[in-house]
Every structure is written in C-alpha cells, then in structure tokens.
Length: 156
Image: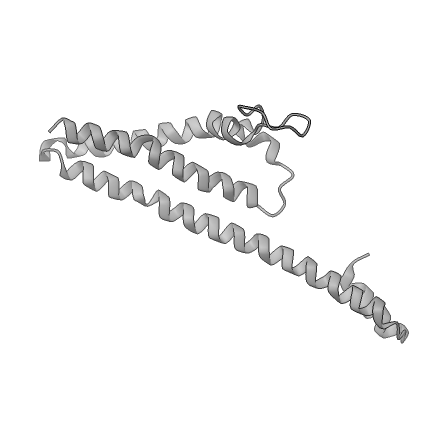
C-alpha cells in the first residue's frame, strides 16, 4: 500500500485513529528521506569525481611545463592515452577486483563479481554507479598521473 494513499483514505473515511495516521505520515517521511539521501549521495559523488578527474588537466599542464616545447604535444597525447587505458582497465578488471568480493556473505581477498558492471543492475537509485564513477576518477588519476609526472621530470 502506498503510504500517501493511506492518509487520503483516513481523511476521506473520517477515521480518527491518530496512531495509524501518524504511522502513515512517518512512513511517507522515511520514504522521501531515503530518496533525498540517495539523491544527495549521487550528487556529491558525481561532483567529487568531476573535481578529482579535473586534476588530470593540472597534471597535464605540469608535465607539459617540465618538457621542451617540441615535446608538449607528445606529453599531452601520452596523458590522454594513459587516462583512456587506465579507464578501460578499471572498467574491465579494477572495480571487480576491488569491490566485487563476497561469497556466501564472507568477504574474499580479491573480487569475483562486478566485472564490466554486470552485477549492478539492481541499483535503482544510481548510488552504485556514482560510486563506480568516483572510484574510476581516482584510479585514472593515480594510475597514470603520478607515474607520468615522474617520468617527465626525470627525462628533462
């Protein structure tokens, strides 16, 4: 029974059972709070992922500033390809290995599910996909940027 319809039924029928009406209002409040909580979580994770992913441009600028002018295009292309490669690796293997470990209620050492995001189809609120995006941004940033920054500094 939909919680919002029960309040209207009590009002239309003229029933004066205050406890049932209050229980109905409490159920409606919990339902709306969980919806807004999920929406806030998704909003925060997507915002934070975009901020973390924007660090890529900063790393690209630092790398291009530490090489000669003739090598700037090569450095930018290397950064772009590193991001593409690390994103594909995280999509195919990384997320499943990091967050897919659960057998019979017991956590495993390394994940055995969620590869290619196949086991996340029961996510109606989008929080699991937002969590994947957030973790992807960190994996792409840390996976290539720190290494490529070190390589560009050591090859001056």
